Image 1: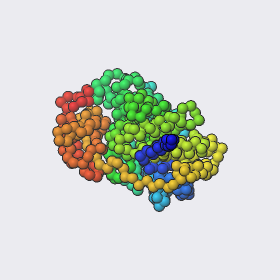
Image 2: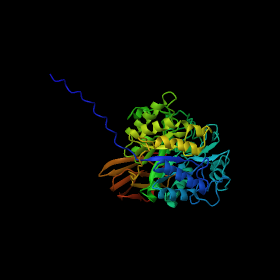
Image 3: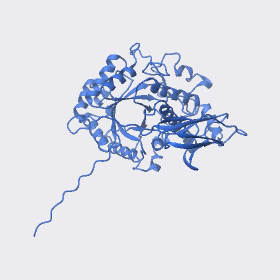
Image 4: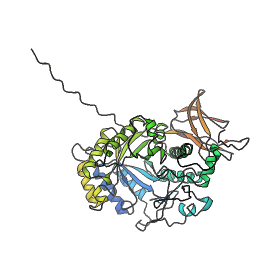
Length: 487
């Protein structure tokens, strides 16, 4: 009698790759971008590490590490005179086959410990002492500092215009491959958005009375929508300048993760209810081409290693057409854990980005090791045979969103909060709302004829194969002030 053959279990197939990004964040809070020599060294170190993309901080706190944007340059004493880091890093990185994404702190306004001294800086024109012209997000008691920082309020239309212009100017003036939106949210704590202008908008658009409590669900939903509308408008304006530019965001992953696909559980996380980020919707609606999770966890602490893997799985499950990368905290971990987290992230099909070049290990962050020593240590483990950066991988993909439409309603004292429908062949194919300035738009429509309907107005224009069509302003005349903000 012949013994039955023992069959080895079939190997588990590798997941379908979601993103080929292998990146490194380069921040502006220390050396790395402030002189020509530093910029050259940064690009050289990144090339030796084997990454294919640099997320280079451009806009820090209402100022830029560049000379040709809508914002004033940084005024640090260490910043080399007449030096444009974004130009130099982009040129050097492109020559080495790397992409450059301009990393933007969108709502960053000021820091009391290292203020920008330029008279044109937003903190001087629209800061805490500007009265009705202030653009800062505030608590119910009127305070505005979160630590040493001041944050711009996404719900103040003039502040939103300022933030949009700053980001778009980078794509207009530099050969960067895209932009990444950081601090695209409200500050931690939930109790923000209490500037009188923001409260007045909220009451006018919703019909609410009095001052809402920080935990008021209607108030939270309205503020969360203002963040989403700001992301939408930035994405549309960037694509209007260059449809092939990548629009990315660095997104929050606080606490334990939801199960894959569980959006109801996501809406109970601090990401959604505290800082008011709804990044699954941003991916679903085509507002993001690439979502880079700030998945900053320490494997040695509690369940954080499992949390990292869980957030990666959840993001992959709700990504729509967007690419997803897991961003891990180099500065919180020793090299072995850095390599493990990167390998698990890449092994799940996601891209990977490390934070950050300046603090590449826990020992560097704790000043027990120099940056060059830390880079040497992580290069040894990341590029070792079988390591996540062992084989050079170019990132050549094109962004999934390359078309859209944008428009605006005018002629009314309450332009925000108005439902907008996109209609094709008599069927509603997409919905959104107007922001505080009356702007609206869609990014995920197929090319071809589409009609927009808002507040009794209609306009039809075909969506192009590539590019963003700008509809004419639609004049809205309310018969009486709209207490609810509805048409």
